[in-house]
Image (cartoon, rainbow, N blue to C red):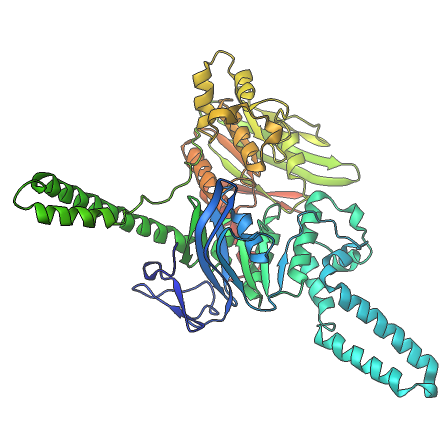
Length: 577
């Protein structure tokens, strides 16, 4: 994207004001705060980043107005996180410029989640208010000192006490307690318990949620959120999007969660083919705009190719004839004509297809009065249901409810506390594990596939890996060196070779970009077996789930209808419109 684009309904900048160039027809932003006039917060102009001879991206241009909410999307490795580093100043552009409003405050998730100096969860969440907390303690000590001095208090002591109180109020000292409590509560922590709960007791997922809380709590003008919904359950994701909808801060979020992007975004930045383009609207509004823009450019390029071909033919026929002068003039004009490049593109999304070795019976798993327990806690109590052939069941519930333990129990990997689960005799399950813990980390990609297909030729193995985005020397990489997204693609490649008639997918979209999530959706649409699916990706569940098993405390509720209808019923029961 080289600049503001009328075709996309984008915004152009002139005289410090943000002017909306509207396409025909009304545009309705996700909330009413998106107006045609806004204040510039930051802008990137023709930015390029290279590392030696390797170009990460070029010609990145977009401008963010105060109060806007931008979603950054693109393939894994396209440079989305590097754009965050450009915004914060951690990374300097090789070419182009980054301009920020003077005094701009940003909040970025600490990936290390060290929470230095914090001993409790509440202190970790309030980390950005450390100076205010210290001032609050100093004011309390001064109040005690005033009480002790009584009539002997001096004007100097009173003035210092007054100045500190005024500064405390100016820094938000009277509101930060409520903000910390509200955010921690919204992200699944008991606010009161958090005041004494040690940071050291947190699990990996909980540390991620505390880190997100610290971001939301921090006093900032700009929130930079990198995959904030990863590992959040459905209720917490809903709370987060509602919080961001009501927030005063400007938001830029990297995410593959399409429902989340639909709910909060006023603009989309698409990073593709080592450059980027921006669009006005949320994710659903971005999709047709991108298709229309590509179609327009394809047509323009086809017209130019036809024009060049016609002119070259004229030059060839007339260069040595009576029209030589005109032919030479046309040749010079053609030499100066900028050629329209084909639309930028990234490597294709993975190509996967789940085939069945055998059809299997109509009754896949019969569950009768099943109870699942861990030491000191009941996870599931007396659940009865039948998983039928061609069911696509979404297993949903809060983090920690016991979804993975329940799955392990019904497929026979762990013993039930009581009751039973029987798998049909002709059923072959394949399990995509959330932690990808079953991958052989010390083996190469090539050897991993060869172990499953020892009679395959080298070409067949390479073709299989190529369908999942691995080519050339990449096939000799050890799995332990791969990123999370790359490991997820390997796990899915292995599943396609199992020819299973029961797929168990535990958070399969966590590490996948949007294009590969959509490729997985397409593969499941053609799948003729049964699927048991755990996911917090609402767009994914709306697309594929035909039935829902939902945790309600220790009870599992069997809803015999698609995920969309389950959402609607739950909203009605909660009294939401």
